[in-house]
Every structure is written in C-alpha cells, then in structure tokens.
Amino acid sequence: MNLPIKATKVFYTNRNSTAQIVINRGGSRSSKSYSIAQLLFLERFFTQKNKKILVLRKTLPSLRLSVYQDFKKFVNSYNLDNIIEENKQFLDYYYKPNNNYLHFGSLDDPEKIKSTDWNYIWMNEATDFDKDDLLQLLLRLSTPTEDGQRNQLFMCFNPIDEYHWIKTDVLDKRGLYDLEEIHSTYKDNPFLSEDYKKLVESYLHVDFNKYKVYGLGEWGKLENLIYTNWDTTNEYVNNGEVIYGLDFGYTNPSALLKIVINDKDIFEEELIYQTDLTNAQLIEKCNELQVSKTFPIYADSAEPDRIEEFRQAGYNVIESVKDVINSIDFVKRFKIHCYKPSANLIKEKMGYSRRKDKNGRLYEEPAPNIADHLMNCESYAIYSHLRFRFGNIKLRFI
Image (cartoon, rainbow, N blue to C red; front, side, top):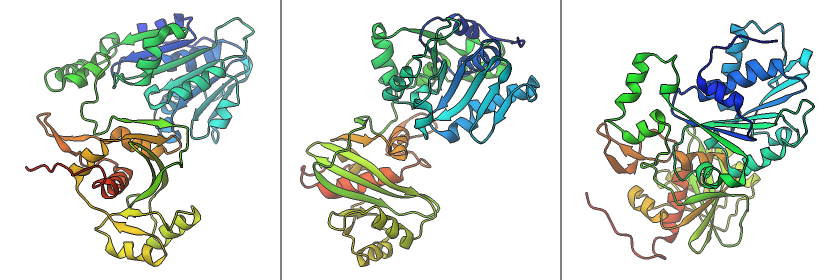
C-alpha cells in the first residue's frame, strides 16, 4: 500500500541513504524528526515486508508525549484505524498483509528491546542516550533480510553540546562506523510559516549559541551548565569513604544520594527520589534499603525536627553547611562518576544550569525552578564533609 506523502528534501535524503547508521543533526523544525517518522510510519511499515521497526526514546513518558503522538496523528489523518492492528498496552502495532511489526519503546524496560532483532531502529532525541545504548542497539540489527534491504539505525537530535559522545566518539571517528550524517536547518523546511522563521532568526542578535544550535543545527556549547566534569559509569564502586546526602521533600521529591569518595574521584548513586513521603515513610525506605546507620548522612539544616526523627531511628544524620556558591565551587574540584541506573541524578546533572537574566548575563547561582533535589544532596554532603580536608574555601563577597 502506497500512501501519499508531502515531504521535504530531508525525507528523500534519509530514504536514499544506504548507510547502517543515519545521523540527522539539525536545528529546530528542520523536518528531521518528521521526515524519519514519514519514512518509517507511512512508507516502510506499509510497503516493505517482514519488517520489525523499533522507535525509541530514553524514557517512556517522553516517548508518549512526542513521537508516539506523531504516529497517532498519522493514523487519524490517513484513516488507518481499520488497516492496522494494535496492542495499546504495550504500544505494539501490526500491518498483517505485509507481516510488519512496529513497537514504541524506551530504555525504562530494556530487556524486550535488547532481546529482539530489528530491521529499523529510530533513536529519537539521540543526545539523551548513552554510547553503550547505541552499541547494544547495533547488535540487534544483525538479522539478514529476505529482500536484501539494509537494516538501519536512524538518529535525530539538536546538537546542543560539542563535547557530546555522538560528536566525539562517533562523528569524529566516522571511519569506525558505516554512517551517513544528514544536516538540516529550518531553511530546509518549506512548510514553516514566515513568523516562525523570523522567531528563529531573532536569536541571532539575542543568543547566538541558541541560534547556532536551534537555527543552524551546528554544534553548540552549554555555556550555562554548572557541572561539566562528570560522566556516567556501569561500574558500581564501594571502595572508598561512604557518606550520604539527604534532601527532604513531600510535594517535591525526597532524595537520598549515596556518595563514595576515592581521593579526587567521587562515585554517586541515587537511592531515593520520590514524592509524597512522610518522614516516617522516608525512614522506612532507608531501612528497607539498608542505609548505613554508621556512615554520616548530611541533611538540610532547615529541617531540624525531621533530622531529629532520623536520629531517634538510629541514623547518623548531621546538619549540613548550606553555602550554595562555595559548595558548587568546591564540588567542581572533583571528578564525579554517576552510576548509570541513577536516571534522576543524571537528568538533574544535565539540567543544572546557571541563572541568566533577560539580557543574557550569567550568574554563579543556579537558575530558579530547576530540578535540584539530588544536586542539593551532593552539595550538602561533599561540601560539609570535605571542605576542611582539602583546604580553606575562598569566600566570595558581593
């Protein structure tokens, strides 16, 4: 079955690619994501035979709110309800005449994804993934096809960070891979309104880095990120000095961070990140997780009553030293390694940014209204525990 498609040149470039990895780097609204959706949802799902197609986002909530919505719009606009079969619970779709299968998934549940062989994989918003994710997914493209069509992995993203692994470990080492890079900008999308084009171009004189990334689709710099000296690791390390950071919450998440200090390397693991926990429930979760009652737990000094309850339960809770600017500067002295299953920790690290005023001036303190619960745990514990061991802190006077 052939469906009529109104497409940009980005669609045809992706369609004509024979590379194993097809990397779409581009600005906002350049049609890169929509073109891949058209190619996989409207063309290959209905025209090829015996294909398994996997569409991925890093997390299931982000998947449901983005590319899955695009698919549902296609189904409605092309009246495909009676042509395809679906299992909404598992986000599975079937086109039985051609024996094709389409699955929407995330790495929240990696076993189903990594235990199946696929013909096409789409990593939507690929900068959210890790390099290990890519390598594992490439292993799932190994099954030969009956029609000789190449199994392929598609990636799309805005190039927000010139030090991202996609650039440094893949594109800059493209000789190691069979890949094609497709670059696109808003100028490649003839269906954009003039008002939107003017909006994008207005960033040229207001925030050039934003224009460079989201307008021109060029690699940018995350100038406002607070922490850059960190990475993720699959290796769980217990060899070192153990401390904890605790941030109390209720409407906002209560957070507990385990920290292992090994000289200037610090290993971090998210233990608790949950809303609607009373203090009694939080203590019970610590008991269930067998949190040490010997090692120090540094907690928000603004919550003396809750700290006392923890002490009554046998925990070695210490009121933290709260000094936002100096604690951030102090944490920057260390190389931080985040344990990969700690999804909220990694997400907070990636979004922990400096405050910027309306004129674009950056300040040292964190931006307001960002998720910082585990970042608070980190600064409470590391600064309070180590500040005298590594020398006096240079105070800032404003």
